[in-house]
Every structure is written in structure tokens, then in C-alpha cells.
Image 1: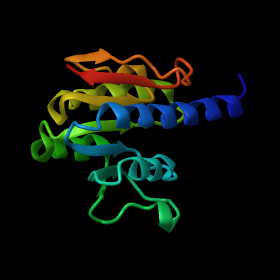
Image 2 (image 1 turned 60 degrees about the horizontal axis):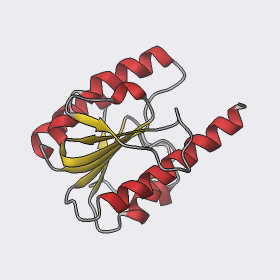
Image 3 (image 1 turned 180 degrees about the vertical axis):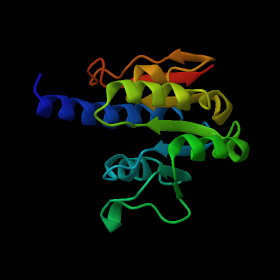
Image 4 (image 1 turned 60 degrees about the vertical axis):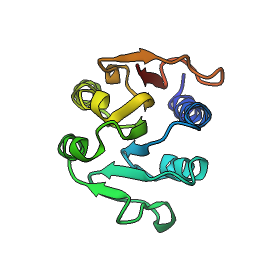
Length: 163
């Protein structure tokens, strides 16, 4: 599979997984956490799909076009392991969906980061809340896997529900 094919598959996985989460979580209250802003594509999709939800974006530095940049109230700037840990106190059992698209070219560092962040998910997510992750290592205690939407290719997205 070419790099272009992998990118297309990853973007489709994000789109269809977010839309599946929106349908499943329609009656589940809670905020949405976007871990990693990148270019703002998924943030824009989240705010379109969840227009009435509070969305908080965790990012180290913002480098997006103004139309895809979260407001100051939506943005939590800083190193993700620190800012997410700080958010646990305020958002315990308050998050309906976490979308974690994190990491860079170092696969070992990405796996370590996914495991480090996953320790916070059980306290953040409401019962029945979803995690959409780009790393299998994001699995967390007290979770069960969710079947991927038919349109999503395996190994491009991982879905978990807090049980």
C-alpha cells in the first residue's frame, strides 16, 4: 500500500468512525476531547457532526488556517501528557468521546505516548463513552473494543468503549 493509499484510508477511518460515534452517542451527554489538532481537519468535522457539544482540543502548538483553529475557550495548549492529566480533575466522568490522533514518525515513541495517555481515559470517559484512536496501544483498563464501521480498513483506527 502506498503512502497516499495509507493516508486516504486513515482519513476515511477517522470520518466514518466519528460519524459512527455521533450516532451511538447521540443520547450520551458529555464533552468531546480532540487530542492533537494537526491541520484541523478532524476538529472541523467534529464541530460539524457535534454542533451542540463542547469540544476541547489539546495541542502543543497551533499551526492551522484561522477557519480551522479552535477558539481560545476550546484550546488547551501544552505538552499533552501534562495537559490531559490536568484535565482529569475537571472532567472526571464528563467526556463522551475522545478522538486521539497523536504521534509522529517514531513508532516506538507513538506507542509509548498512546499507553501513557490511555491511563487517563477510564477517569475521563462517561460509562459507554468512546475512544477513537490511531494506535492500538490506546486500549485502556475497563474498555471493550467496538467493531469498526464497514468502510474502515483494519489497522487504521481503533475504537473502544468504556464499560
